Amino acid sequence: MFKHYRFRNYDIKLVIMILALSIIGIIAIGSAKESLQSKQLFGVIAGFILMIVISFFDYSWVLKFYWLMYIFNIGLLLIVRIAGDEGGGAERWLEIGSFRFQPSELSKILLILFFAQFIMKYKEKLNSFKIIISCIVLVAIPWALIFMQPDLSTSLVLLVVFCVILFVGGLSYKIIFGVLAVAIPIAIIFLNLIMQPDQEILEDYQRNRILAFIDPEEYAMEEAYQQNNSVIAIGSGQLIGKGYKNNEISSVKNGNYILEPQTDFIFAVIGEEFGFQGSCIVVGLMILVGIECLSVAMKAKDIAGTIIGAGMGTLIVVQSFFNIGVATFLLPNTGLPLPFISYGLTSLWSLYIGMGFVLNVRLQCKTSQ
Image 1 (cartoon, rainbow, N blue to C red):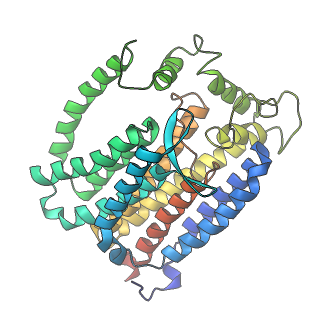
Image 2 (cartoon, rainbow, N blue to C red; image 1 turned 60 degrees about the vertical axis):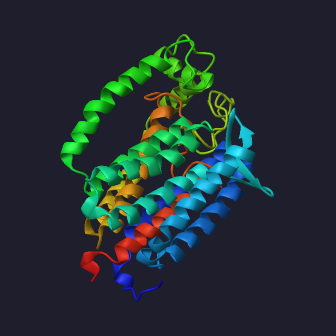
């Protein structure tokens, strides 16, 4: 369960970058919605302690319980399906006393850990038809439960992470190219189908978000409203921003032109108040965290460690890309939090748990033997 580690092998760089992002999040939330700042501060302190504690647990020992993780994950998602709390037209939350918990956030971490052990166990047979189908079925069950909440954005991120996991796990290039040859036409057909007025694949609000991205002028006062205002906010920050908690009348944030700026559009607050330089710091830190996770993956002692590092690095970078892409109107509105920055204790603690395992992988890297 525990091993004797050398402190010099601890990834202090990664810890500092995660802490820097978390502090930026606390500051930005204080401006977006000051009443939530103390909660986020508590979340960061508790999550940071949790990450450090987990980093000293031998991940190889923890992964022995990979089937329990999978069953626990499915159980939580089923409870959401049966007795979930609704908000914004979706059932994604569970009420535990006064605490609101979103299982799909934890699901991403649990699936990375599950497949880390599953693929390592069957690494010699990964390219066999039986194991590939097994992997697809095993990811399809939680994916479907998340998609039906409905949570299209999280289900898309999950698919990307799953593909990266299979790739670093050793999936043959021939199979990868074969799947792409089939997947790309299917994706085109899917996009064509969801554009039809009578389609039943997506919820109306999801389809409208895609249409708003394609034709923002048509939906300027509806689905595209927040994204248009987000772009205005970021652009108005110019190089150095309008200043923290400024009281300018022209401020998009102060005028309440963005609903819930502490979550999906926290990047707009950062862009408006800290300008291009503040935005670049956030983007740079996200990329560096992703690169550091991939560096850990490359040095891992086994395939399981490689998958944990690569999976978490992919999750951070892809989710950041989606969130910032929405805030800058490069992507349709998806509703994903910005890692370590957006308000939300479930997302924050889930990421801290995942990064705790990455830190343990680093402690046991080949160069650390």
